Image (cartoon, rainbow, N blue to C red; front, side):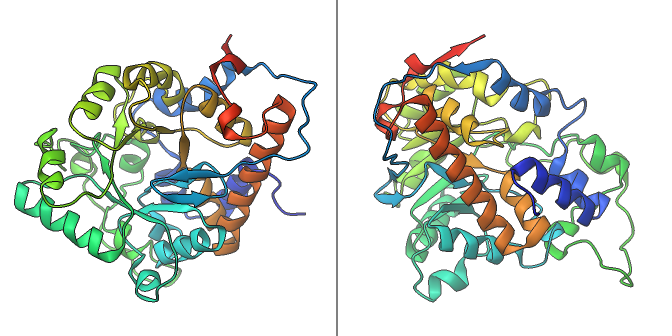
Length: 350
């Protein structure tokens, strides 16, 4: 029998992956407090089900930026797919296409879009250094058929990841993949320079949204929000949605768990734009808890990667199907028949 849940997919993936690859995907930063907080948060929130309702038919479908999808979850932008298999972004995109799941990715979709296939693609970016490059990027994504831009705002500098530093991980692997048996490993990166003060987009600020808005009306999702003041600012500056996220525990260690940060951010937004979230989701009930706390959808990061590492494209597809069916069952057992019936009254922090 194969894996029956996401945790078991990870066990298979761990056996198959090179240690460098597994540690890169599974690991967090420094003491990994935030990595653990993302999972333990779900154990602090408990569902309060309603009964004596006809739950014969359960509708899990959602509509997001004009696209109807079967479930309120999307594949999050994740680095390191090529550490699993080469050309992995295309493989994940094909699985997203088969399941009609939104894919957030910076690469790997051109072939599918050029073939006219109905992939729902959101382009991920960490921003641009100036107005000209931001507007050029937005126009290009719109022309390619992107349905939204996901602006990841919590990646100003490369974080300090002990597992990577210990493994002398070289970020060149991100593009080429880890060499296979018989291939020569490149010289290891100096661990003292692997993470410390390596800039990505340290000058990113709210003007970026204004720059893009000056060239395109494509929806902008601000990903990486944890503070309610930033949630409110995103609305004021014209974001189309936010995603409450701590980068999977991979940026600032000691940051609050995403699920725990979600309620205050939802309150700050006040229903003016959709709120999504990501972090630690491994079960359908996790998704239901996020929805009960006000999220309109969730992004799945590591879970699809475990499916990919375990069984390739069929593994990604199976993980998405499993989470969808678990969510459907959790909704039925909680007495909610569609996403519109999910609200804050059905969850308590214990």
